[in-house]
Image (cartoon, rainbow, N blue to C red; front, side):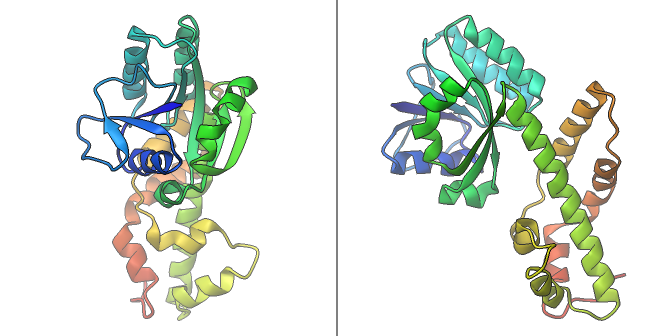
Length: 262
């Protein structure tokens, strides 16, 4: 099977590398990418049997998929693995179906470290039969694969995951700063909390995170909520407070002797 990866950035690059290590013939499409061992950089992914689309925006995803459909490869599977609106996935799936091409939305959770280690958790929307055909490829990059419903459902799951993730970061930062103000070292407290009911991957790996995509993630969730007349008050708080949380502020907070909180 020939596997293509459109977008060789922070997530696409390690995913392409993992696929190459798994024995697939890997094609990479990204005009800004440097050479990757085991990955053939190309100007078209038309010959790929399976294509991951890992680009920043809904518009970028549509451009890649529309480009693939200009020279359709019947039986090809396109996995939308960017964080986009469910409606974008559904519209592109309908268009692709007229060309005999299948679309899945395969949302990635687990971050860059999960991509590098092949331990991503995949939230998938699409036809179960197409997912089954995709299993050899998906298994090469993940340890968890969950079909949540039809195309678009994976993005719904990713939006839910993102809402929890950013709210948890805000809550941890707030709680640790309160502890510091009372003389309890956040680094010591965090180790203690890992033995209790509030343990989480976010708590354990907080200082390893980049805090890059919070604005986009929350905006997508708020757009989705508006479409179904739902309010997201916690998301609003996360949007307001995330600009105050940086890699540097977390590093200082979790240092052995943090400065008192202002």
